[in-house]
Length: 143
Image (cartoon, rainbow, N blue to C red; front, side):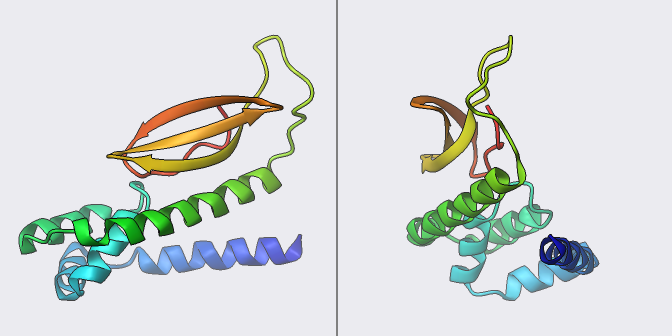
Protein backbone atom coordinates (compact mmCIF):
# COMPACT_ATOMS: atom_id res chain seq x y z
CA UNK A 1 0.00 0.00 0.00
CA UNK A 2 2.86 2.38 0.80
CA UNK A 3 4.40 1.72 -2.61
CA UNK A 4 1.11 2.55 -4.31
CA UNK A 5 0.79 5.80 -2.36
CA UNK A 6 4.40 6.74 -3.15
CA UNK A 7 3.81 5.97 -6.83
CA UNK A 8 0.62 8.06 -6.87
CA UNK A 9 2.39 10.97 -5.16
CA UNK A 10 5.23 10.81 -7.70
CA UNK A 11 2.72 10.69 -10.55
CA UNK A 12 0.87 13.76 -9.24
CA UNK A 13 4.16 15.61 -8.75
CA UNK A 14 5.24 14.85 -12.32
CA UNK A 15 1.90 16.00 -13.70
CA UNK A 16 2.17 19.21 -11.69
CA UNK A 17 5.64 19.90 -13.02
CA UNK A 18 4.54 19.16 -16.58
CA UNK A 19 1.64 21.58 -16.16
CA UNK A 20 4.08 24.51 -15.85
CA UNK A 21 4.54 24.82 -19.62
CA UNK A 22 3.01 27.94 -21.22
CA UNK A 23 0.99 27.85 -24.43
CA UNK A 24 3.90 29.40 -26.34
CA UNK A 25 6.33 26.82 -24.94
CA UNK A 26 3.89 24.05 -25.87
CA UNK A 27 3.60 25.40 -29.42
CA UNK A 28 7.38 25.52 -29.77
CA UNK A 29 7.76 22.02 -28.31
CA UNK A 30 5.14 20.40 -30.54
CA UNK A 31 6.16 22.35 -33.65
CA UNK A 32 9.70 20.98 -33.22
CA UNK A 33 8.66 17.35 -32.64
CA UNK A 34 8.94 14.84 -35.44
CA UNK A 35 5.67 14.16 -37.27
CA UNK A 36 5.71 10.57 -36.02
CA UNK A 37 6.18 11.49 -32.35
CA UNK A 38 3.58 14.24 -32.46
CA UNK A 39 0.95 12.16 -34.24
CA UNK A 40 1.67 9.13 -32.09
CA UNK A 41 1.24 11.05 -28.84
CA UNK A 42 -1.87 12.84 -30.12
CA UNK A 43 -3.57 9.65 -31.30
CA UNK A 44 -2.65 7.43 -28.36
CA UNK A 45 -3.24 9.74 -25.39
CA UNK A 46 -6.70 10.37 -23.94
CA UNK A 47 -8.76 13.44 -24.85
CA UNK A 48 -8.60 14.79 -21.33
CA UNK A 49 -4.81 15.15 -21.53
CA UNK A 50 -4.17 18.86 -20.95
CA UNK A 51 -1.84 19.18 -23.95
CA UNK A 52 -4.08 17.51 -26.55
CA UNK A 53 -5.34 20.88 -27.81
CA UNK A 54 -1.77 22.10 -28.29
CA UNK A 55 -0.84 18.89 -30.10
CA UNK A 56 -3.89 19.19 -32.37
CA UNK A 57 -3.09 22.86 -33.10
CA UNK A 58 0.48 21.96 -34.06
CA UNK A 59 -0.72 19.16 -36.34
CA UNK A 60 -3.09 21.58 -38.06
CA UNK A 61 -0.47 24.35 -38.35
CA UNK A 62 1.99 21.95 -39.91
CA UNK A 63 -0.63 20.27 -42.13
CA UNK A 64 0.40 16.79 -40.96
CA UNK A 65 -1.31 13.59 -42.06
CA UNK A 66 -1.33 11.32 -39.00
CA UNK A 67 -2.99 8.33 -40.69
CA UNK A 68 0.31 6.42 -41.19
CA UNK A 69 0.76 6.34 -37.40
CA UNK A 70 -2.82 5.45 -36.46
CA UNK A 71 -2.34 1.67 -36.15
CA UNK A 72 0.64 1.94 -33.80
CA UNK A 73 -1.12 4.63 -31.77
CA UNK A 74 -4.21 2.42 -31.51
CA UNK A 75 -2.10 -0.44 -30.12
CA UNK A 76 -0.60 1.91 -27.51
CA UNK A 77 -4.02 3.35 -26.62
CA UNK A 78 -5.38 -0.18 -26.12
CA UNK A 79 -2.44 -1.02 -23.88
CA UNK A 80 -2.90 2.15 -21.82
CA UNK A 81 -6.62 1.47 -21.52
CA UNK A 82 -5.99 -2.12 -20.43
CA UNK A 83 -3.57 -0.89 -17.79
CA UNK A 84 -6.13 1.63 -16.56
CA UNK A 85 -8.82 -1.05 -16.49
CA UNK A 86 -6.56 -3.30 -14.43
CA UNK A 87 -5.78 -0.45 -12.05
CA UNK A 88 -9.49 0.35 -11.71
CA UNK A 89 -10.33 -3.28 -11.04
CA UNK A 90 -7.65 -3.51 -8.36
CA UNK A 91 -8.64 -0.26 -6.68
CA UNK A 92 -12.39 -0.85 -6.82
CA UNK A 93 -13.73 -3.46 -4.46
CA UNK A 94 -17.03 -4.48 -5.97
CA UNK A 95 -19.13 -7.47 -5.11
CA UNK A 96 -20.13 -8.61 -8.59
CA UNK A 97 -22.23 -11.49 -7.30
CA UNK A 98 -24.75 -9.23 -5.55
CA UNK A 99 -27.21 -7.05 -7.38
CA UNK A 100 -28.92 -3.94 -6.06
CA UNK A 101 -32.44 -2.73 -6.66
CA UNK A 102 -31.13 -0.73 -9.64
CA UNK A 103 -29.60 -3.84 -11.19
CA UNK A 104 -26.11 -5.35 -11.34
CA UNK A 105 -22.97 -3.27 -11.66
CA UNK A 106 -21.08 -4.01 -14.86
CA UNK A 107 -17.30 -3.70 -14.50
CA UNK A 108 -14.95 -2.52 -17.25
CA UNK A 109 -13.46 -5.46 -19.13
CA UNK A 110 -11.83 -4.19 -22.34
CA UNK A 111 -12.07 -1.62 -25.11
CA UNK A 112 -11.15 -1.04 -28.72
CA UNK A 113 -11.25 1.75 -31.30
CA UNK A 114 -13.75 1.71 -34.14
CA UNK A 115 -13.39 4.68 -36.48
CA UNK A 116 -13.47 7.82 -34.34
CA UNK A 117 -15.11 6.02 -31.37
CA UNK A 118 -13.89 4.00 -28.42
CA UNK A 119 -16.01 0.93 -27.72
CA UNK A 120 -16.03 0.04 -24.00
CA UNK A 121 -16.93 -3.52 -22.96
CA UNK A 122 -18.35 -4.17 -19.48
CA UNK A 123 -19.05 -7.52 -17.85
CA UNK A 124 -21.21 -8.86 -15.04
CA UNK A 125 -20.81 -12.59 -14.71
CA UNK A 126 -21.36 -13.93 -18.21
CA UNK A 127 -23.34 -10.87 -19.36
CA UNK A 128 -21.78 -8.07 -21.39
CA UNK A 129 -22.76 -4.48 -22.10
CA UNK A 130 -21.20 -2.18 -24.67
CA UNK A 131 -20.81 1.61 -24.38
CA UNK A 132 -19.70 3.75 -27.32
CA UNK A 133 -17.71 6.90 -26.54
CA UNK A 134 -16.60 9.59 -28.96
CA UNK A 135 -12.83 9.84 -29.44
CA UNK A 136 -10.14 7.69 -27.92
CA UNK A 137 -10.62 8.75 -24.28
CA UNK A 138 -10.53 6.21 -21.49
CA UNK A 139 -13.55 4.14 -20.49
CA UNK A 140 -15.21 4.61 -17.09
CA UNK A 141 -14.62 1.76 -14.64
CA UNK A 142 -18.34 0.94 -14.25
CA UNK A 143 -21.37 0.91 -16.54
